[in-house]
Image (cartoon, rainbow, N blue to C red; front, side):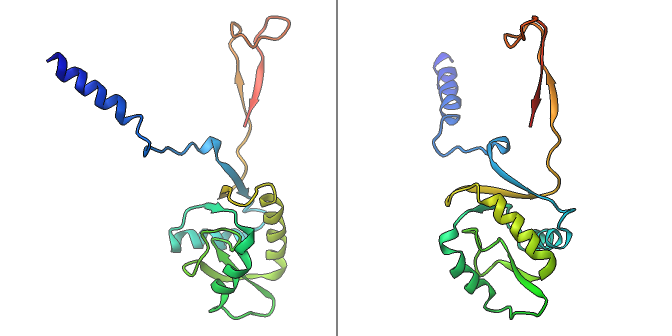
Length: 164
């Protein structure tokens, strides 16, 4: 019985240490929160693309090959006056390919959204995984530190810190 319990315990311990075991910690991911209220037409395009393609919100930034992907993705979508050709996943993402969802968004609205996206993605070098999420940024919550915590201020009272 003792050997059986040791064997079982070892199996459980080793299964948790497997090199193939991966978890995703959303709090540690690079995330861009796309402001859907500010750019509603582009947000609706992304939402529709998510539903139709079942593609994840993940984007591996790859600027070096974006132009080649754009040529491939938009070859079946002719230009339309007053509208921009758009793809999801975006052509700046490695995940963009022939299966990308393509369509049109009014140029006036889309150019502002594109500028915003370029500015946000500029922070991340090529090869970085970024989650592009529709919605509003999360509200900052306050967490109260217990007065006996070692992070006490000079008065000895507990402090409040802001969390993201």
